[in-house]
Amino acid sequence: MKHACLTLVAAALVLMAGSIPGVACRCEGPANVKVAFAEADLVVFGDVEEIEGDLQTSKGQSVLFRAQQSWKHPAEIQLRLSNKTTCAADLEVGKTYLLFLKKHPDTPGFFANKCFGNLSGEAAIDAVKTFRPGTPVGN
Image (cartoon, rainbow, N blue to C red):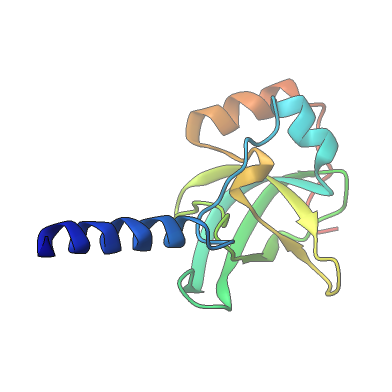
């Protein structure tokens, strides 16, 4: 009987944890690169130079991104991006990315999110080849 009660309590805890909003990221992301491009406020291709902070805190991460090309909006060579929430983009220092970014609603700047359709490595390089030439960065 004691084992059955413990099992019941454990099952209830699992169900309650699964119903807490914001615990896990749930998104399908854009259907393809064209949709991701259309939905983004800024699209940049380049490398992550530095990541500060921790996704486990409310402040999240501050990402220093070195842009090689940009689309839809002029971009500086070095961009400081916000990366937080349970849907934070999976970014690593030294890796190449094609990021589809959105404007912050109430502060200047842009933020990354894994639901926006970002690409890394060869997939990013291949996708950039299908785009028209981007805006030179740093202007």
